[in-house]
Length: 211
Image 1: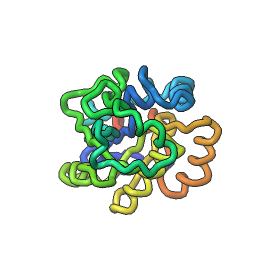
Image 2: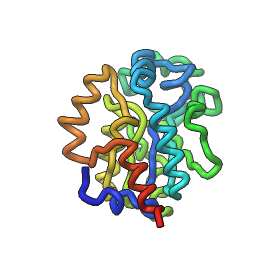
Image 3: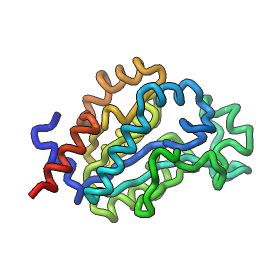
């Protein structure tokens, strides 16, 4: 854990970013059953909802990174094997459909911001995410969501490439299988980002608010 976590995640320069916590990805309409099972087993949604509540109370920026596609797939390339068959279905993660919605467990606030991605595997690729963060004075990104297989490493690396410092909430990210996700955290992402629990972040914010 960083020596001064309170200073690192001070709400005035920190954004809590969720990655693809959508109904059609990990929720009731999930297209990836194994990942959805890992999310349920790890209690990721409960942990993330608690962290989101604390971020909103502390005044940190909250951004939800979502993925979606036009039914005609305009603006999206079908160049990813894992999405090959799914992309043939015009209803898969169709923009405006229930699949693209955030899972209800996150209890979205009107003040939360959404950044929709139509292409690529990173939430920074041709999206509004970077301008959103910079306009809010963000220097530190707290990464949450799915998955440690692809999305979270992409988020972390692209955030670092753009000059942000990154904190990963260990109990708010998951991969499939669960053991693989833990290995990615230990052997890859720990070299790039600070990895702490959601509870440690919450405690840091609560201590900062204390008189």
